Length: 429
Image (cartoon, rainbow, N blue to C red; front, side, top):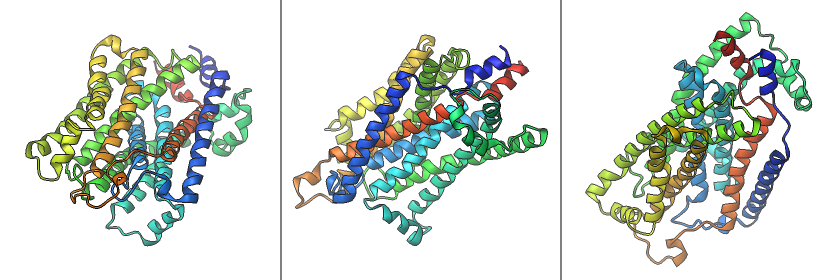
């Protein structure tokens, strides 16, 4: 394949009618979410279904989900790059775009959960290093900036291509391209500095990525609630995050391949290899799930027993077992067969993993809140159950739509598959 053909194939393109409809739908969902947030600001957190006991509800579930999805950037970009896994090249930019969008909205949903956004200033003005909340703020901010750099630095050679090969689709963004990369000449010195910086960032982001979800798990584990007092929580959260992020990448791979006709760049082999990774991650996550629930169920300590019975055979049992089946067991069964690792089955598996991942976070948060160690006495009946209000659903869906909208706009502006790296690998072969 000629170099010019690769450039022509991978340059950003204008949205067709389907793309415009997609952006319109996402924008409408975001606007509804903004209206619901306006109502929350005006009338307070009383418009939500959260009360004294369930003070962490849909918003924190969304936060943990976004943090989980964001870890895919370190898996695809850093770990596979450092391992010199060449086949992952077309997936690195997809992973980084997902990571940046997810971590942005993880931070925003926490501000929403605070009720009054100005309370965020108290975290910086009165924060204490002893608090895991401060650790979370530091590690999320660090991870966001490293992810931005890991997206930006490999983009520099592609930005030069975008400036040199102007097309109708890229012309509106030429000022942005020149602002971001007009200094890039592609000489030996710049390439050496860039490669070294990318390697340093790849090494740095791995402990930060592990830290971000470990610290998030500590926010739960240091709270005195049934189901959260676990030394397994850090590894449990990290393994689930890698699985959720991989599922998100698989979904994005399929959509991008279909929408832009990139069968030659995102091939069946990529889906096959990602399928094997998903199976491995699902097995690891299943192991930590068994570890998380088996020992507490064996001991059935007072306080924990009501929580576990609710999950295993009570009101939450259907949701709990359905989530385990949909997000781990069924994907593993499908992906063990070569036909299950073809693009369409992989796409369906990716959707199952992502949806299951969201419900898993919801199940981690809410049932524990409904079973405090101190019994509920003399409280209104509404305090003993929780179902999110329409404002909560609207804000949560708006944040999810916002994340997808950010990814969509990044795909519109920048090449989704690295052009320069694809050309270099083509020459090497």
